[in-house]
Length: 297
Length: 261
Image 1: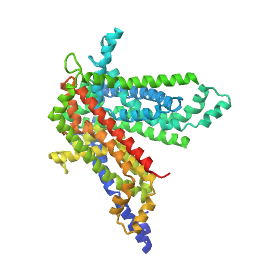
Image 2: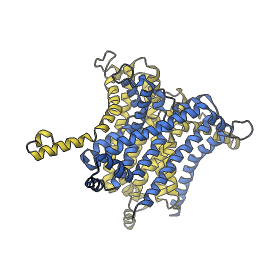
Image 3: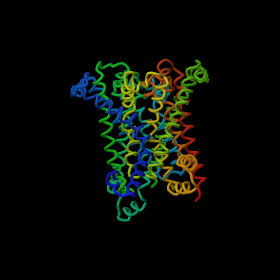
């Protein structure tokens, strides 16, 4: 309701000035969000469509087609998709085991506490942990050599590659999946299963025709969140591989540090590409979430 | 039924192995600094390093500042939205979730371009200005978690009745917020605060690109130049994260125990 609309009577004036006052209460928040979230992002988005003189251009977006940039996006997408899918599958298995697996009651709180920790244990220390475990002198590498007679690095495995980085990302991806999925699995009512069994459905039929159709938006949505999570990660990859692995966050990091692309506006386009990719996956997530919530309540 | 239970055990066992083996590996590695024997030498070296002490102190102060600024920003906003501007809730919620959508590296890129020495608000010109910018950046990163936590706390109490009761006793809005609302959602604020602490203490991207001497960039530097100290640091970081999450659980348990019914 605007001031002009309701300003005809004295009561209306009082109500509208009160509602203006009410809006004042959220000014600090919107000011903060504007200055430190929306404006900085908007600046980059606008910059992506400008040349060095500030004129409108699409040349920066075209510049993204450069082979090294395309390759960076490709590797980033591959790692994000792989770690999201594997994280989702393994996280689902763990959450299912803890919630519906008929295990002792202490398993579930233990798992969720641990997942709370592990989902936050990312960044630089995580890279150290995996170097100490699967690096050339790591414990598992050594143990495989000592007891299994397998030289891990002779098989072509390397921690500083796609496989290694995906394996490392799973350390925070799986717990995140467990944390998101546990409430969804709780939403599966016992009565649905009993009803299905009364009608003669097998376990496979119950999952295919009852549980999965209800769960899939949550599953897919959580997977998309995991994808965005991996796509934007910087610290783990940087600490693990230095700049030897050409993923898009590391390329952007180098660009911010030293303009390695020799083109500021191309840097903005690089950032815009990331916003578009994570943005699309999150829009899909929000849409699927609202779809899923219809069923769970 | 028995077969499915076997599968559950298998999943939990394999999962546990994946999560525990790197921790054992890191711990074992961190003890290997002295040749031929296990020792806590790497921890001694790390803890005695003045750069460790300085960067850890810096990040601790940064985390406390982030929690203070974040709480002052989020609690009144969430309270006000709950009380007076319910229509605005989806908008505010959407904004608080944006830091999960926009990668941190993109946000800090924007900061550097927007607040550099040629801009209207040249925050990066002074070290205090950059510290402030870093703090606001960390508030942004923590926003989704902090807001969610406070909002859940507010939904659990009757904001309207409490406010009306306080108003009828003549309390002003500042008194209402600090002496009525805040004490009632203290545990929700505390769990948000511990989570914020865990996020800020190891934060790398913002601190590194804004060139601030925080713990995250220090970790990265040690990792690039040393062999055993990084493993010791990873264990220390894991313990700090674990402590934060443990405190959240403790706060939550106290809250549940203290509630009637």
